Each structure stands twice: as C-alpha cells, then as structure tokens.
Image (cartoon, rainbow, N blue to C red; front, side, top):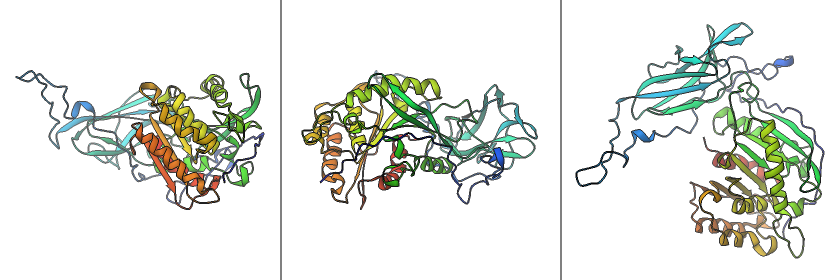
Length: 436
C-alpha cells in the first residue's frame, strides 16, 4: 500500500520568521525595529567543520618541469612549517567606512595564527565593498578567523569561525547584525502561461541577505511549498521547518547560506509531479511542470533576488511524488538542475518507471547532476517504499555515482512517509547537497 496525497492548493502569505538563537549565541533585542539586531558577540564561536583545500599550486602535481626522460617532474609541496601567503577576502558594503549608530567602523580581522590574534584586530587593504588580508602562515596549518567591525571595540561577525588552509584564498560574506533568515511571499499568484494556472511562490532569504548586499546565493527550488515553512498551512499540520533548520545550521556553521524557493502545489499536483501516466492514477505532465520552473519561474526569481545562476548553484528537492519529479529532473534536466534531492521518492509509480529511467539514461558531461541525494524511511503502512528506493540507490551507483562524493543515500530508521520525518532528515540532505 502506498500513500497518495490528496491535491491541495493554498494561498499563503508568510511573514518573516524569527527563531530564538541557541543559548551560546548572541542576545537578540526585542524592541521595535531592532528585533533582529544581534548585540555584540564578544568572543569567537566554535569552528565550522569545512576547510578550504590546499591550493593546487601547493600540492604535489604532475604539472611541473619536464624530466630528463621526457616525463613530467612533480612539483613538491613546501615543507611543513614553511611560511606561505594566505589570503582572506572579506566582502561587505563600504568595508572601509561603515556607518553605525555610534559613528563609523571598518572591516578588520581577528584569528588564531600570528600575525592574527583573537585580542587585536588586523587592518587590511579596503576598497569599496572588499577588504583583503594577507598573512604568511606555516604550511600545513589551518587558520581560524573572524571578521569584525572595529570601532574601538569589535563587533564580531555572527556564526561560527571561518577556516582557511595556509596557502589558500578564502572569500567570505559575513553579517554582523541579523542572525535570522526570513520567509517572504515572493509572488502571491505567479501565473504560468505554459501550464495555465496560478500558484503562491515563497522564499527563504538567509540571515545576511538584507545586510550584506555584496553576497549572492545558491538557490534550492522545493515542491509542495505550503508544507515548508508554516505548520498552519502544511499537510497534516507538520511543516518541514526549512527556515528553522537553515537558521540553526547557518548559525553553527554546519549549513551554508542558500535561498530556498517554495513552489506551492495546486489541484493538479499528481499530474504535475509525475513524468509518465500510471494506469491506476493517471498523471504524466511532469515535463510541462519542469519546463514551467525552468523557463518561467527561474527567470522571475533571478530577476527578483540575488541568486547565483548555473547548474552548480541550482537545486531541486522534494518528497514523495515531489521526490519522483526531482529525480526525473536530474536525469533529463541536468543542464539546469545540477543538485538533486529525492526524499522518499515514489519509486513505485508506473511500474517503477524511475528506476528504469535512471538505468536507461546514463548521464555524462553537463547533463549529469553534480550531486544527488536519495533517502527513505523504513516504517509505516508502506515501509516508505524502502525496498524500491534501495534499488534506485543501487542503480545510481551502477551508473558511476559514488557514495559520499556525488551521491548520498540514507534510510531513516523507523521513519514513516510524512513531513515530520522529512524535516528530521532535511539537515543532512542540505549539508550534502550544498557543501561549504
């Protein structure tokens, strides 16, 4: 037995969503327009997990000089401890002269490795919206750092410490005054000429969006938009908690800042989310729906928001039939959607069409998704279709996808087929699909 959700359409107007920061985080003012203004956090936060790779020019490579036998000699890496130039580029509006309520300040840097210090700010070369800092750090070490706005006493950037490997260059887009993202109604009744209907389009904007106008962001398009942010509108009253998940993860450094576009479903949900017709349920208008996203919605979003373009920064994620259409998009629209998430995909649809489709269409070049995430639960009346989903995962691997590199498969123990459990698996999915 499998779950088919009754088609439901909603007209939703979302307000900005505020999430209380964790106990170790900075305090939040509750007064008037400064509700989201974070007071000075006066100490560095714990480091994030990610780290910039050692730059190619410092690795042992085969791009060196030609050897005496005509081969290529490896260029040796510097000896451990050898000072190597390390660059941090901080992007922030008016980095050299930031207007504050108490005067002006400028972007400076504090960090863990001399000449950086956690107690004294280092001055960089600031021009326009960019402040550049260069230090000589011992090769093989990792520098933790944080931008500050210096105005006598430092205003620390919000969130976890940044990291950079000695010898690398790190670009950062910090924020100092707002620790929370927000959910907005982007288009209350977006009309599709291709499909001939209207739907609500919502957007999650990350914490730095309004403050740091130098930043652009990867974008994740998610189906069933009314289930993502508001339990009052979500199916069964259980939302995915997308905004809470991202706010928490961005603050602790476990998740990257991204924009999420929530595409509301309509009364034609079953048809739009299915690529073929099923003998029992009909459907089969998935290509029209994906074309609507690509040719109508994406240009409108790119015009309205500071999203990064290109398939490497564009994702598609959904669950159930939304997982089905996302996986299908990865096979046939990989030039548009380089990042694909299929949570509890309806692999049973039309005699397991999706499994056969992945098998019959090996993707290569820019038609191949850069990252694919697949999961399911293993409980409930249908066991969340775990057996078929495991077969789907194995089919991806047979096509050359490698677990932990460009593919990740997860089975949620005792998880059933509903939003409550998809919300639990969402942080892991986002961490894999949008690595630091």
